[in-house]
Image (cartoon, rainbow, N blue to C red; front, side):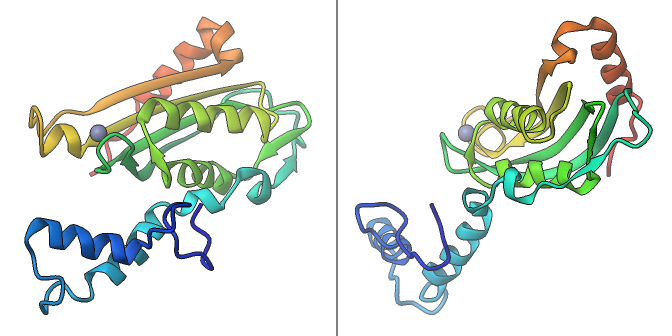
Length: 201
Ligand code: ZN
């Protein structure tokens, strides 16, 4: 959607910077005043970064390693911070993703790929439920996992700074695939991993 060569935000030909300038005009602001005149350019750079996941895929960035010890337990990575934009309000939501997967007898994922999976899907227009589902499905498909679990804690600006204005509210979602869906024992182990963690400051 946002390749570095294309400046268009949509197929209709609206340029990002023009759209931001027009937004200022509609607000009754002077888009040429000192504080604002460079803002459309800065916004374009910032929004392309925040939505940079469209140009990436886990298939391309993934590297599988041989499962040398035939490890068949849960592998988890906790407290992976993420930053995303809610597709309903274009406002930020952010927090932590906790991932667990059970590897195939042949392969394990490189640990950094778990964080990459989070960034690739978080840096798109998202809702939290879909973000967790997409990460879990990518681990199953690209990582050939036997099971995947993704727990997300998110603070949503649309809930904190507008609407009901609940500043301390945290939304949690949990997605299970494969063996985690089938086995209560695996789900229990995952919940123990999540609840025994240190809360990041
Ligand atoms: Zn929202």
